[in-house]
Amino acid sequence: QVQLVESGGGLVQAGGSLRLSCTASRISELGFSLNTMAWYHQAPGKERDLVALIARYGETNYADSVKGRFTISRDNAKKTVYLQMDSLKPEDTGVYYCKGDAKAWGQGTQVTVSS
Image (cartoon, rainbow, N blue to C red):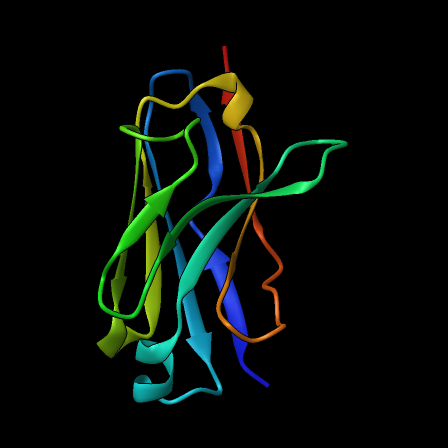
């Protein structure tokens, strides 16, 4: 069972930046490279929503709410996917999770954006 560990969250003022990381284990480098990796956002009291994804060949897709502000990338050799978050807004507050093609979720990392 693949394991995912997110990190990089924290408290930041509106307009600031954070870089989230998600590292996979119990999966080979090749196996990781074949996964579409995604980041999800769960605001307090709301459902978990897709924020960004990156496919095996590097194609990316973003939710309209983060286009132009967030950038997803991956390093297959490190089995890690990143989410660069710029121009953060208070509505970006919440827990961010990564996920691959398997059912496993990480524990999430908390992002809090103050106004």
